[in-house]
Image (cartoon, rainbow, N blue to C red; front, side, top):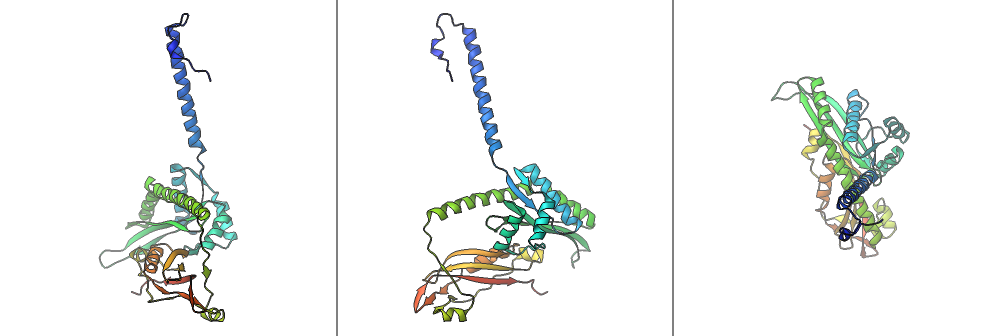
Length: 316
């Protein structure tokens, strides 16, 4: 590229008006080039490949999923997987609408849908009554966002609307699903998960992580191998959170713990998630545990164990 030397403006034969015109032309070219590069940079940002399954077989479940598809498509750099293809793929791997999945099951579903992330959910309209108010209707939509790469539940929410009329409650719910706020929260969770996963991959490449032995399935097998499994000093039961009570949620949460030779927990991973706050209350409880370490031939060793917690609605 040739660059005009402004210091030679008084050079014989060079008209000042022509110089100004050339300067403006040069600035225009630079501006247009910068704009082109910026636009190309924005366009080159990869879109997020997202699958959204219907939130159940009811008309409200289908409408809620469709509304969310439209909301995310309009508010984010989203490439949606065809919903009919997603539904067929989900049926092909035996998915029947569960919101309580192991990470392995979730990864299999994400691979089948052919997405980077996917959203599942449930939507219903329920007739409610209480001692403090007359009969009313609640329309709700529970939505779960899952990473196909890790199988983790990265975000959940339960949107709800109430009215004396069921149709009005459903209309109000639809308006909430269609808001920019709903889209922003979903997209923020996805972008955060992308960043976290990139950081985890970088750490796993750089770190020299010691191999931790998995515990045998039962104590009899462990004894035959000369092992004594880790045992907690005391057993703690996670509380049933209010967020789960509002959704009347039940589920099973599986947690993998790396217990060191000193009996302390070095790492916690969810192997099965349930949402509605059940995962968070489980992890918070597990962090309080201390163990007698695993032993092999009388010597303490690190070991990975799985703890399972079943949650049921409290009896009235």
